[in-house]
Image (cartoon, rainbow, N blue to C red; front, side, top):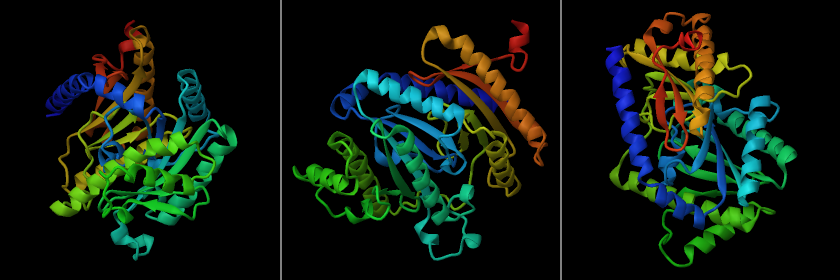
Length: 362
């Protein structure tokens, strides 16, 4: 069963990578019109898919996932990643935008956090705490990268997957749910929406606000479709069957993987938290007892493949040790390792067949 799962996932990845290679031209055309780069922080929750709910083409954003979407600029690896991101944007002569997300369920707003199930487990279901953290993190980014990276806090309401853009004063907002009756195909709507964003984001370059417009328009279309079709996209319970550690997980079947970036200096904590939820999913019979531990390290040039392999092997050993030392030690045998190096140009994976003995065999 485990072998079949791994084989199936490799086939899914190959199909998706080929699919994405064919839209490279469309991505290039999009970036010519909307050139701002987007560095996105979000929760590891498999139910949160920012690309899908905005309708933006795949691989145009730089995703960063952790428990609760929690990040801090004093994490050395994360700060280094942000520096490299800003440097590349400067070389490309484009603006470096940053989208800081949190998620919540509107249907549970009237319940105390202790009775909620659909909000963020990373903040113990407390949405106020999530917003406070994201606002604090935004100030950190401004302190370190003011005038170089433009951070925007965005909430994702998961009942209908509608987004809300918070202003720099953390009081004013632009809510997609307030725009559902607008003529979004009209010739003046894009300008109107850009001005609304400029009003709540004073000091931001007009280009950055303008390049946010297609994301909001895409979300308006998405929410309209959900409401018309009566779809409730947010499953009542978690249904993840796997935990991913590293980057490059966009190809994985939606809603089935907790994705955790490698930058948290206490990386064992989100790994164990995610494994615990997967374990609960299995005990509750929501998913079969047949899961995967997906470890992925990135490479951008063929010459860097071996470095990515070495990084993936190290991440895999760290993750398996964290699980083995936790109260969910039995999950080491249930979550079968799929350790890969990922070509970030198309997300095609290179499976490390003889992990964990690959490096010792070289």
